[in-house]
Image 1 (cartoon, rainbow, N blue to C red):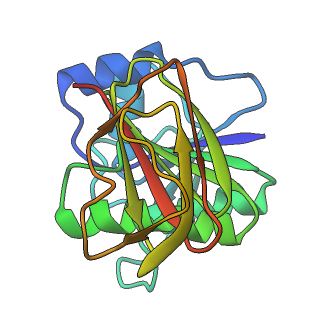
Image 2: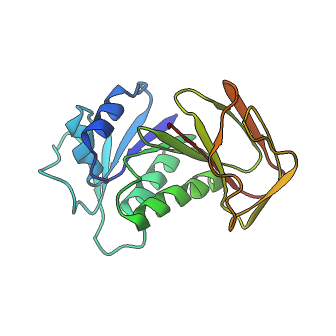
Length: 209
C-alpha cells in the first residue's frame, strides 16, 4: 500500500500541474499535512484525511473528510504526524509531495524524515516536479526517466564501499564523506543506473537539467 502525503509548501502553478498528472491507485492513501489540503483541493484531489494543527488551511475542511487535529504546541511537525499515520495504516511506500522548497528547516526535516521511514521498514521518497530523492543502506536501481543528473550525498559521516554503474563518473568501492562533494552532479550514461554500498546511509537525488 502506498501513502501520498501533501506537505504544506505553497505550490506554484507548475508544481500543481505536475501533481495533477500523478496517477493514484484505488488502494493508495492520500494524506494532507495541514495546508497541504489547499494544494490537493486546488488540483481536484479529495484526500482521505487531513492531519495537523490546522493553522495554514484556507477555508473549512468538509465534514465528509476525516480530520485529526493537534494542538499548535506539539513535539512533531504536521508532516511527521502524517508519516506516522501512513505507517500505522500499513503503508510500505510513502511519497512526500509539496514538502520541499519552502522554509529551510521544514525542507531539511522532510528530507531527513526518509531515514525515519526507513527505520520503520518502509520505503520513502521525496518528489518534486523536477527531482526525486530517496535513501539507501544497501543497493538501488534507478531508471533515468526524465532525469539527467544524479547526486550521491551521505547522510552518515561516511558511506563506504560505494560502487556504481550506468553513470558518467563511475565509482568502485569508494568512500564518500558527508563533508565533501565528490558525489554531487554526476550524470546518467545509460537508461538505468545502479548504486551499491557496504556501510552507511546514502541519499540518491535525481534531477532534471
